[in-house]
Length: 155
Image 1 (tube, rainbow, N blue to C red):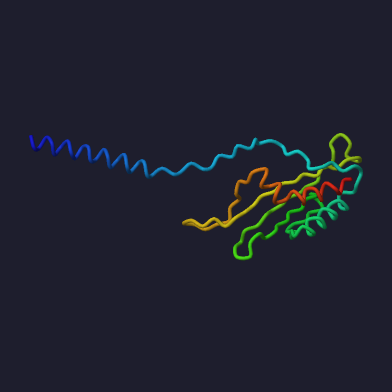
Image 2 (cartoon, helix red, strand yellow):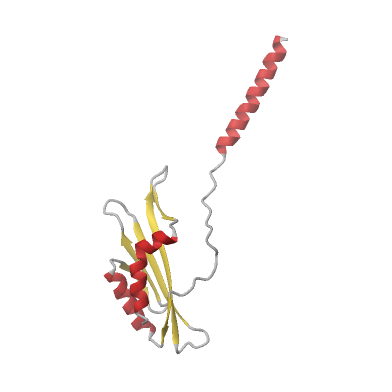
């Protein structure tokens, strides 16, 4: 009888340890991004303007709002800019703006596209800068004035 109880105990112990081991060995699921994957809408459409002149105006506006131009590509009509948001860490905001000629009337219209991201230093077993998810309200609080300034270029 004692041997049967000992065997049952060991079987239960082994099963319990296997369950605990598999339960802790799984990686946590990555955060779910609920934003739809679709072509972005233009921030604004400019009527009859030279792309290089518009890029210059956009670059000046970004600088006025504290952004540093990291890349300005007149051939691809693209601007990348960053703004440090912390004196003590490597955290920053990043804005990417690109221009596209209208397909139907390329000589008349330029579409201006805008992407924004906030990057923070995430401290964990491997400290790295990562893009964080922010709400529409947070984004509006951070760069709402910049967007308004950019849109005013088209008026």
